[in-house]
Structures are given as C-alpha cells and as structure tokens.
Image (tube, rainbow, N blue to C red; front, side, top):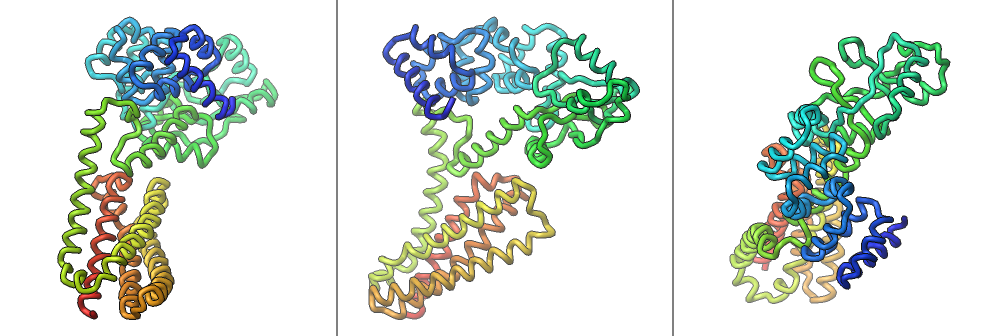
Length: 447
C-alpha cells in the first residue's frame, strides 16, 4: 500500500470513529497491518483512541502495543486487566516480549511474569538480564544450530522434521558439542551444495559474532556495513546464546533518528502528541526556562553597550545579523560532528584535523560574507566604518562558531551529556554572546 493510500485509509478510519460508524471501522481494520493500526491510534485524541482500541482483535493487541510509542502504550495498558496483558504477550517473539515487559511499570512487569509459564519466563528472564540497549537486549533465543561433523542431507532432514523456521532465518549457526560458536551455514549454500557434503566443508565466517554487551548502535552499524539479515550473539566464553535480526535493528535505527531530532527541542521520541496538556506543559517548561536564561545573557551583553546604541541607531538595526550568521554556521558544524560521533568517525587521532578544517571553512566563509555585508552596509547606510566593523565581527563569530560547533559535542560526550539535546542551546549562547560582544565592542572602540 502506498503512503497516500495508507494516509487515506487512516483518515477514513478516524472519520468513522468520530461519526460512530464502528462497523465500518472494523471492516477497514481487517485490511490494515498492525503497524498501520498503531499509527492510526497515535493520531487520535485519547477518547477516540480508547474507542478504536476496544475494536481491535485480542490476538493483534500485542503486536500493536509493540508498534506504538511508550507513552501511548502506557495509556492503553493502564486500562487493561492482567488476563488481557498476558494474552497480548502470547503472540510476541521473545525479543519483542522483552521490550514490551521493560516498558511496563514495575508492578505490572512482576504480574505479567507471574502469569507466564515457567519455560517462557525463564527464557524471558535470560534476555532481561542484559541491558535493553545491547545485543543481549535485542536478541532472540529462537535459533537453529547444527554440528559441523554432519552432512547437509542430515541438516535438511532435520529442518523438514522441525516443520518451520524462525522468522528472518537466512543462515544456520554452526556450534561444537559444547555450544561454542564456530561459523555459519547460509541457506543458499545448504540448498545448492551436494547433500553428501559435510557442514565443516562449507561453513563460513562472513558474519562476525556480536558480543552480548555490544551497544545497539554498534549492532545497527554492523548490519549496515555487512548487509546482514541476522547475526549470532555470543557470551564471554564464545557460547552461542541467541541472534539479532533485521527487524529489531530497523527499530534501533528509527528510534535513534527520532531521538536525535526530538532531543534538539528537548523532547523524547516516545512523547504522545495528545498527551495531557499539564504533563506536556511541565516537560516543555524546563527547556523554555533554559532558553530564557541564554536569551537573558545575550540581553545583558547588549545592555553593556546601551550608550553606544543610543548614539548610533544603525547598530541596533544591524545587531541581529552577526549572531544569526554565527548560529547558522555553528549549527552546520555541530550537526556534522554529532553525525560523525554517531558513526564512530571521530576520534582523538582525527579531531585536530577536523577542527582545523572546520575553522578554515569558518574563516573563508567569514571573509566572503564579511566583504558582501560590508559593501551592502556601505551602500545602504553610507557608512564605511560600520561596514568594516560588522565585517570584522562576522569573521570573528563565524570562526568562533566553527570551533564551538566542533568542540561542544566532543566535550559534552566526555562529560556524559547528549550533544543532540544540549548542543544547540550551548552553541546559540556562544554565538549570540560572542557575536554581539564583538560587534558592539568594536563599534564602541572605533566609533
């Protein structure tokens, strides 16, 4: 289904809910994927969202809960009884179930675990023992392993007897008798090689196993770099304990991208667009307060040159140009460096080269735009001196912006601060203060 068709379908579903045409809404949902229903739920205000949720078939509830953001999931789970919660988890894969359990309040987590059978609870607790943002937290224990000393014919007969394979199975994992990882057997090799061939003769080592504590972002990078569909997960003793599959990696990539965008506004990717007004107000108030402090700092700098501004009104007209240009230039560098950090492209060995490059770009752009702005000011106001002053201030601020944009993410990462969250505010403060102080300071000295 195309994006336009999906949008029209979701819009029609929302209209049916609003009009009370519940039978029509049920008919539409039959043709919708759980992810599409999840999108429709998130797009509805709370009252209509509850109506739509009541229309959903119980066997789809688990999949849909996994697709919605945390805040929406929490609001839906709040109205479910324990039997419904346990039933919703029965259709989930183990890795999805682990994510679902971790998003529940602590009391509900204990109740859901208590309602599961012993075998499933033991397997789930094994996954929950690892950090959520690690390969262990992403992995699924449902894997197929074979020994290296058997023939491909034996493997084929084993798979036929098994009857089905886990989703996203593109290869089998080869282990020794103690469960230690030895390599992989791609299905294409299994199906195209003589049945009499031993597994040991065709096993490959194309996929490097992931350690169970590997960060989820590093897992995603491995999948991207090596075009993986699945990858084995091992522990400190090289024992194969599970596998990570592409569906979970796509979720990591999406969440990381959403978090980067939302963090720049002081928000979280799991925020509900229809969350209660007071709760959203409280969340956003803190960020607005931080920005107010930075704005007051810039205003204080301006106040120090009040006398100069009163004598030369032209300065007040042009005052916003320098910090604005610095803010844009710094944001370009900041974004580039944050992306480089996310891709592990920035280290101590190349930081100085990167810094030199960005400062050089800032200097050249500063000189270019300083000449253009100086000429414009000269023509506009007929004042050559102010043109030269604003040109000099632009050079200083663009160089400062480039340096700050490159160094802020590095320093913040060192102190455990998310540069995507705080980098923009810190950079704006620096470019505003330096830009205004340089422009007005030079004007005070020279005029």
